[in-house]
Amino acid sequence: MTELHAIPLSDDLFRGAIELERTDHGVLPHRLPAWARAQAADPQISKAESQPSGVRLAFRTSATVIELDTSRTTVNLAGFPLRPGGVIQLAIDGTLLAEDATAHGTEIVIDPTTGATTTTVGPPQTSLFTGLPGEPKDVEIWLPHNETIEARGLRTDAPVEVVASGRRVWLHHGSSISHGSNATHPLGTWPAVASRLGGVELINLGFGGSALLDQFTARTIRDTPADAISLKLGINLLNTDLMRLRAFGPAVHGFLDTIRDGHPTTPLLVVSPIFCEIHENTPGPGAFDLEAVARGGMRFISTGDPAEVAAGKLTLTVIRRELKRIVEERGAQDPNLHHLDGLELYSETDAATHPLPDALHPDAATQQMIGERFARLAFHAGGPLAPENVLAD
Image (cartoon, rainbow, N blue to C red; front, side, top):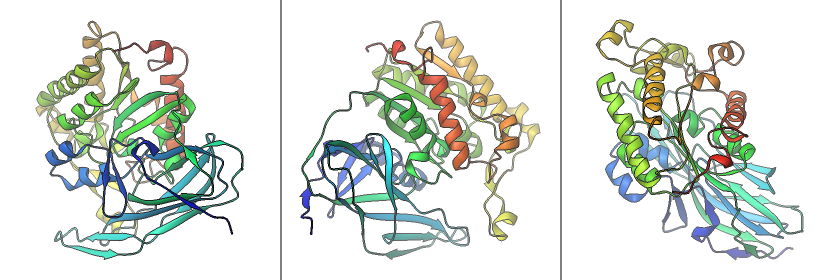
């Protein structure tokens, strides 16, 4: 029987996390630092930032056997369809080799009518990867993008070494679409797809329901080393009905100002929302389609009145126009600030062949398509985040 050796879960094993919390049992990756989490009293952002989209363990080894112990936490709404389970994926030298579905762990069920919660605690699980090539190789173990995961132990049958990748770091911030909602595995989120095609190291600050121009997010981006930054803004501001046009422009300016305090010359790409029919010309707030839920499905609707746009309510059409204007105006003093129309990633024409299954989020195939398009538009020669555009701050 192959003898396995415990590998300490040191900080340098993890990539893509902003902070690592040491628990009684292991390591819990976070995508916001503790000071920011203390300012975010919203359970939505607390859940989203603890789901390690883009976070992976990375090391070099000759091991043929790797074991990873994890414990997951899932959150579901009573009476609503269960969200897909998580997947742990192992890649060698950039190529996906194996995966393991998550199981057990802690399940939290929330009654949406009362807010009452029921918690069931289950055991951790061990993901076993065997038959790996025996020569030295770069290993990445990508954690689930859609579940809170605590890493509890790592064992291999050969020593491991942490080696810097040498690739540029790309930090991306966005909504649930960037977080990876409706992707079926962590390497299938569009930022993961784009990062691999663009040859960059990903830090994904896509937060489901929580791309809301929060200053704690802007300061986190400001303080995080990165060679390229992108921001996909708009959809959450609309479907939460958080602000009106009067507040939107200054909030975008303030968000950009804060990032520029720490990254004065880093290429910075502002991306407007992709096509979403329910919100194109109808303001929020968004809501669940309860008739679809009653049929066992999941679908979203927009509950606003288009007549309210004249009073300052936001639609995707308005948001795209304003983001383009803001970037163009600032560009006179900031040549490293760029704009990308989200309709170039997913348009009304695309919706005819790749419809959003819940009227809001792309499916797995469409996440892949968006990632491929972003890589081509942003990272390839001549793109705003291409290597030739990187300047030292």
